[in-house]
Length: 346
Image 1 (spheres, one colour):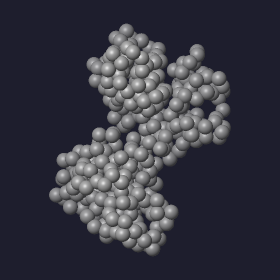
Image 2 (tube, one colour):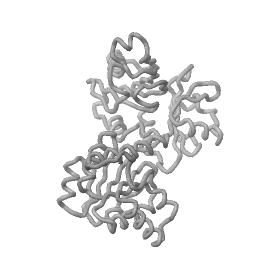
Image 3 (cartoon, one colour):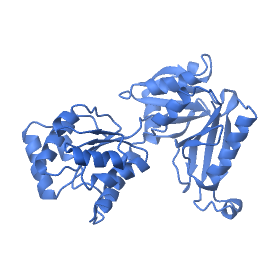
Image 4 (cartoon, rainbow, N blue to C red):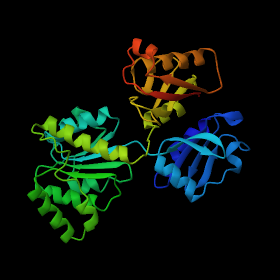
């Protein structure tokens, strides 16, 4: 099965990539990776996916649903519209960018910061940025490739730097562009960028003033408003990004080849804390990468996964967790809802 995770890692992120897992019947646990309607990997050559045909109607239905269970030829199949790990590119390393870096890390983004002042670049490193480019903004942005999972945040110290950044970013593929500043300042920057040849539709779609309107005042409050808006945009895209870089690399580069269990929420109903597609990789020593919601439900599934490892189980298992029952209430599972979680031994 390592070949599957190699295929996920190497998938072209500019293509429409889908991961499918059979959840019932004699084909239970089989996987396929589709890229632009073509199967590029299937876990069993003559298995369930061998005779499947994925026309545009089926794929559009999956895209509309996002992560979730679909009916293919009368069989329940978990489908994920595969996204890459989310990346934030922050132009500026001043007081506002520091809490944005910190919250961005908390939600699992890779954080890239561009700052031309060495002192402020050091502050960004200390705040936990994945990479800091201490160069003039235009040169730094020349080293950044955008894609469907890249969120650009422009929080520089002046409108002329905002303009330099926006002119470069407007040419890149992106999931989001937000720019700090008053409406008047932002309008002037956007007008100048369009006058210099930028696509007007792209520039006019920039979120500015950046962040949700919560009357934020302090750098920390502004960061909360910015990150809330980014989360809102991200979650509308229905691109799971469930396989983080850390998760994939841990699976593929484990020299000890110790067994692991991958827990994936395949269906969610009600107010359970995490969406379908959320993943947690469980190691034999009980350490984990990722989360499927925390609390008693996650702890119970962790114990089930460790038991599978200790008993050398090879078969996958589908677990139903009811967070609304009286037993769940007694255990303190107060979120409500239900989740179905697939446990796969790697």
